[in-house]
Image 1 (cartoon, helix red, strand yellow):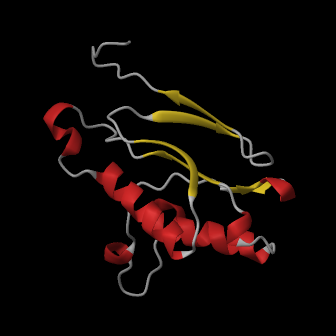
Image 2 (spheres, rainbow, N blue to C red):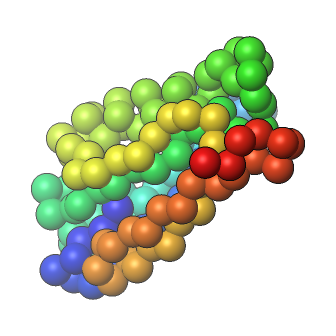
Length: 133
């Protein structure tokens, strides 16, 4: 997410949708590990800089099945659950996604210019003999 008019942005690589199950005995989870806490943390940081949610440009990438392949690809659907969590959190703040490239079984590599909001995405290839088209 970024505020191009202010030349500032934030990015995270959360890999689980919800921190609730991991917040045990009053111990706070690692913020950027979970979608819910990562989104809230980035928004709070940007709001402290007096950037309103309506001034943000949000782009969402990822949600691939990760290291699993074949039938196991969708077994836990963590990528899909992460995407749902992102959409819910953003909707709670009235924020729309401007651009996205999500899902699938292949990971992505990003280059994000925080001062402009420009993002370049490269889809990664599996090395297990999968067709490299």
